[in-house]
Amino acid sequence: MKVSELFDVSGYGVIVTGGASGIGLGYVEALAENGARVTLLDRDAGRVSEETGRLQAAGLDVQGRVVDVTDHPALDAAFDESAARYGRLDVVFANAGIDSGPGFLGRWFGTDRGRPAEGALENYTDERWNRTIEINLNGVFATVRAAARHMKPRRSGRIIVTTSVAAIRVEPAVGAAYMAAKAACHHLVHNVAMELAMHNITVNAIAPGLFVTNIGGGHLKNPELQKVFAQAVPMQRVGFPDDIHGLALFLASPASGYVTGQQIAIDGGYVLGSAD
Ligand SMILES: NC(=O)c1ccc[n+]([C@@H]2O[C@H](COP(=O)([O-])OP(=O)(O)OC[C@H]3O[C@@H](n4cnc5c(N)ncnc54)[C@H](O)[C@@H]3O)[C@@H](O)[C@H]2O)c1
Image 1 (cartoon, helix red, strand yellow):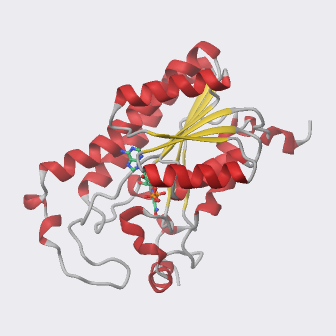
Image 2 (cartoon, helix red, strand yellow; image 1 turned 90 degrees about the vertical axis):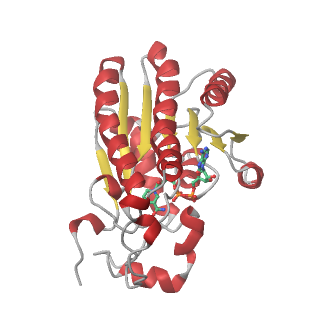
Image 3 (cartoon, protein in one colour; image 1 turned 180 degrees about the vertical axis):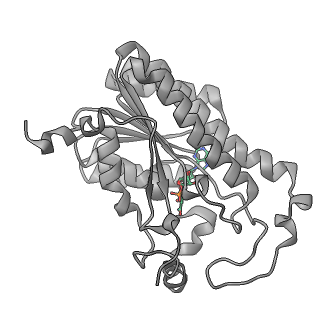
């Protein structure tokens, strides 16, 4: 067998949460362009219809559904619908996530706004904490659970969670709830990978570094800011959703069949520290 055949995902049934933008949209494109049938679930109705229409017009087998991952019954129903349409569910990306607002430091790659009062622990609101955990952790739990319900009876599947380099190192400008949620997702991946291993289901995490997406209002779309952020990255550039395609295809395909419980950072060396 040619090694390239190990990356064949044609005919696969795939679900991506938060698939209408950024990194999730990168997963959708990577899989659909390689012959998979993909359903993107996202709470942003405008983007769901815009991106689904664009990809369908390009001839790709992509469906979109407006679903909020905090609504677990709606999430379960969307999984049931997609699995029924495809007659199989091979790959699930648990990716939907939000920025949690200011952390305790305002200093963030060259900008220094001092320490923002709302990021300080004593002022951190329950509302902000709970909302971040509800989406970035509980939403991942509900997505992984729904995936397992469909994959276990078939004794096959790939679950891929988008964590963050924030699961490895503290990003003090990003905020406590985000750090806690991403680190928890990382260890959740360990637990679920171990549980599902005997069912031939692999569970891994992708930990992106600094990527240009719509997160946090899309602040990193500013080219000047990209240059500043790039100074913290040994490869001297920020990441773009296209950078995620190869890793997504690897973890979704037979090529990674004996890899489970791993978190792979995709960050141009950012977690290693800053170079020159
Ligand atoms: N951009 C980065 O630098 C970076 C770095 C590390 C990790 N991440 C993670 O990558 C994932 C994707 O983020 P992104 O940067 O592509 O951001 P993005 O804002 O471009 O895309 C996130 C998508 O998720 C959707 N979403 C948010 N909350 C949702 C909910 N409750 N239910 C359903 N959909 C929801 C949004 O509508 C959006 O379409 C997140 O988990 C994020 O934490 C991003």
